[in-house]
Structure formats: structure tokens, C-alpha cells
Amino acid sequence: MTKSTFTILLGGELTVTQRLREALEGSRFIAADGGMRHAATLRIEPELWVGDFDSTPPALIEAQSGVPRQPYPAAKNETDGEIATAEAIDRGAERLVLAGALGGERSDHALQHVFHALSLAERGIEVLLTSGAEEAVPLLPGRRLLDLPAGSLFSVIGFSELEGLDILNARYPLENFVLPFGSSRTISNVAEGPVAFSLKRGKAMIFARPYDLTGA
Image 1: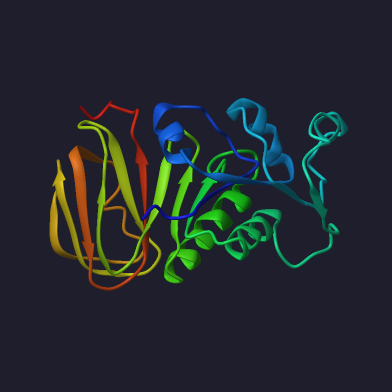
Image 2: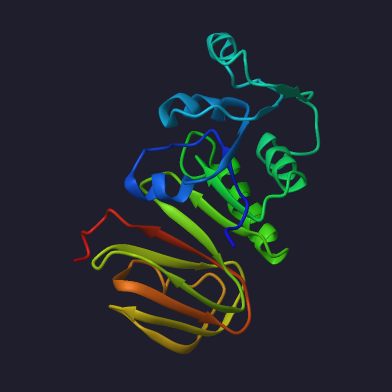
């Protein structure tokens, strides 16, 4: 059975690539504030637009006047992106694509998207963060396979000490490795095709650049 997928349009960078199109196939869409600008690029119409609209130019509001809006005050306890993901989950989302979650002008927002994605993954929700050119997925205890082209770059960033880390089918494989918190040991690895990961304890994010073949 296909998981119910929602894409959250966020304010970071977004490049339309084949992998992005495949990730969004069959998805429903919710826009968070200025992330609505990506709707025209993707040629879609979100079913909901949430936020305080402090980063949305009037011309965009006028151009997307047909999309139902759910306004919030600027003085609120959550980001527009977190509000949008909560709306998606309320509507039955089992898989979330955070499009525009990486890069952009606000590093604090991009970092918050990463931490939020980890918390969602701990609740059992599948999450992909993407700019089109770059992708990130949570790595929690268990196994996962990431379909990457041979020669493409990826890194594992630990958000705690990692125990029992396996990285297979990569230029620099690891087996039952202990990665100290803050270590750069797992930066800039190179995929030799789909990469298999396994982790016994800890939490991390895998950042991948599927179109960057400089490591080939």
C-alpha cells in the first residue's frame, strides 16, 4: 500500500530535478508562508496555505488567491513549517517531503527543519528533506537503504554519539563503528550505488548530493 504523502513547501532553495519529481509523485501539498513561490515552479496548487505571511509579497498572495489560507500571528510558538507539517499529519500524512527545507537565507530555519525531521522520524513518520539538488533523511536505530548514483557524494552527521554504525557499498565503508559526537569522520563519502546503513544507537542525518559526481 502506498503511504499517504504530503509535500510541505518551505522557503529554502528548490531546483526541479528528476529525483524531485519522483519524490513528489502522488503527493498532496501544503504551503508554508513564502514557500508558496515554489508552487508555480512545480505547477501545482496546494490545498492549504499557512503562516503569518511575513515573508510573502503581496503579488504572490494575489497570484495564489484561490488557495485556502490559514493565517497565524507573527508572535507564535511554532514556525510556519512546523504548523504546516502538523496540518499534514492531521490530514493523514504518513510520509512527508519537506521541499525547500535546505539552504536559503535563514540557516536557523534550515537547521530547525533538520531537527524537526528527526523528531518526526522518531514518531514513525517517513521524512525527506530536499532542495532538489541536495537531500537529507533521518538515520535512527535500524536499517535503511538509500538509492544513490555511483560516484555521488553523501555524509552522515551525528546528532549524538553513534554506536554500531555500518555504511556499506561506499568508498569508505564502516562496520560496527562508534562515531563520537562532533566527529567529521563520516563527511564526504562516495556512493558505489545504493548505500546500506545500519545503526544500533544514536541519531543522525544522511545528507546526499545525488547529482554531484565530483567524487567519481
